[in-house]
Image 1 (cartoon, rainbow, N blue to C red):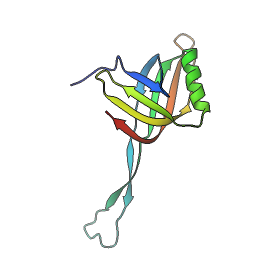
Image 2 (image 1 turned 90 degrees about the vertical axis):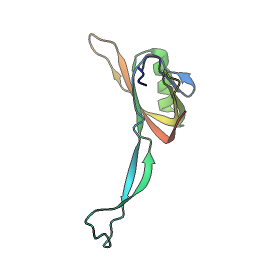
Image 3 (image 1 turned 45 degrees about the vertical axis):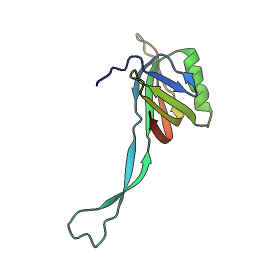
Length: 127
């Protein structure tokens, strides 16, 4: 069943992050290790699975001084924070991550926004 994103919540370090307008990720990927050898006579490379990377989480929010202060504190702290995304159907994604980018966009005639990037450390849990 399809759902829309309205009602999704995002928490970082247990704090609800308000004014979020878009979330991208986690952008999970898996490395592959080439195991091709002289014994491969079929003309195809062979691979095994390598390490997984949970990737990054990106999100956009409308500027709010209190929310930005929370994110800035997370950026300054070098400790991974617990992150929780709850979708409107109660699906939860949980993981740990570091705020790595915190750029502001200040347009002349539109709302001030912040496009945040979080580097995920470890696995993403789906419940």
